[in-house]
Image (cartoon, rainbow, N blue to C red):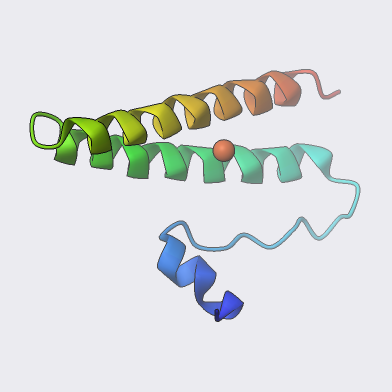
Length: 82
Ligand SMILES: [Fe+2]
């Protein structure tokens, strides 16, 4: 596997860690952006398979719900930052 190609293949690009190593807010925001990109992708996939392939639709829907939960957790963490 070519790990260097993952950002391109994944479709969400790559965000380098914040230049300031202690910039926790920016780091959390980068994670939220990645979660939102994943949500967009899985949303497209659920729409693609809705009414066509029930099992695939349910699989993508399960992953989509998981990503939305991740986003909520990171957003909660962001608002707790000083
Ligand atoms: Fe996630």
